[in-house]
Image 1 (cartoon, rainbow, N blue to C red):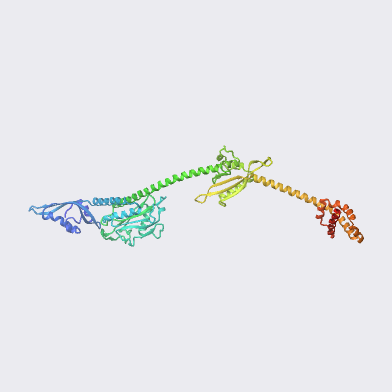
Image 2: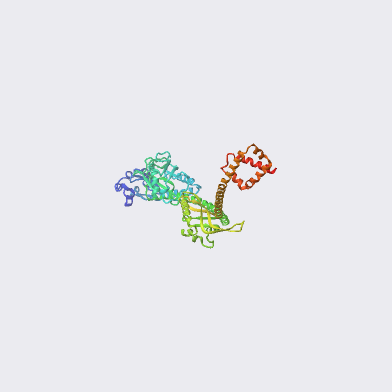
Length: 554
């Protein structure tokens, strides 16, 4: 066996040992195949041409799948017999393998384009690899358990979540190295393929696992029946499938041809498969997004029209409301006030009320100095969320005027306002707006003040009357007591004869004339009833008076 320098490169580690040695010794692994090819040239003197001839050659400790174009023609001696053969060959291994891999990619594009859902895309992907056992010995797909679109986030690390095995090709799902599910947020429980997936999504890269550096789990470095020339898998790639460059939608794990070295072409093949899956899922998601966007746009337009109509209704209602309505920001600046509110607080409508209330000093100028502190306390209770709503009254410097409908007289006083205030919180629980409803209570305060004044006058009159009665009673008590005592003495001192005379009508009439001035005065009779110093025999006097009146009338 004699060869040139270019052929020495193809022989690999066998060069230069192969020089001058038997071909059956140097190419022992393929000599049965080669001897068959050389026989027509050596025995019949015929030239042989072959293209893309498959040949397995051991290179660098690996039995490689190789492809060749070659021509074999005999070397004829002087006697007319073949002395040997010239073997002119060109290796096409890279070309054939890349062409076959391109077919895998095209088949994948064709199949996944029919997928209507994310799950169907994964299923079509695995089915498309079925016809390429050498280039894709096995494949795994892990997807989100909710089969939803990953939301965009600031970093891939924020997208770590739980994944489950969606499907597999060529390898038993009960393999110990293939977890059914894994949660990338649980660092301590992540190992093997799950750890590789975590590294892939965090590093935004393809993770390559190799048997020779012990990064490939031993249970995956196994022969796949009917696929990959049934040799143990040497290299596996773990790739995240992302949407819009954000979190991983799924993980695509593929085993490579064990009879081909893993090089840049192999890595590019893996990336091409990943890109097809990423673009297909992205297009599907984009279509869904567009559909959702159109629906949301329609709903937004409807909601906007409804909101505009509601706003118009609210504005009309607020402008015609008999109470003041105002909405403030947390910094105290108003964002809406109706005309009634401006009238109540005394701000002219033609002024720019937002500019007027742009500072704290401005609203203080229209409030009575004694009530400024109360407003500040109520506002603070709302801002600190101590209370959700408060109600308080305060005065403004604008004077109050009205007319008494009964008398036509003018009524004046300070302007009192009742303010009902409530806070509105945002989604974070912070105060977003302060809503205020204002109405005037000046007439009520005027009425309460007037009633209080009239009540004080009535109480003062009552005290004066009581003092007068007490004085009059005191002045009448002594004379009346003397009269009563005298009358009592007269009654008890009369003998029977006098008693009979007392029954005489004439005597009764004379006595009645004497007592008439005392008993016909209404105020004196009331004083007699109120006196507390009556004699123990006063009942006899009251008994006597009716009788005297009776005789007088008779």
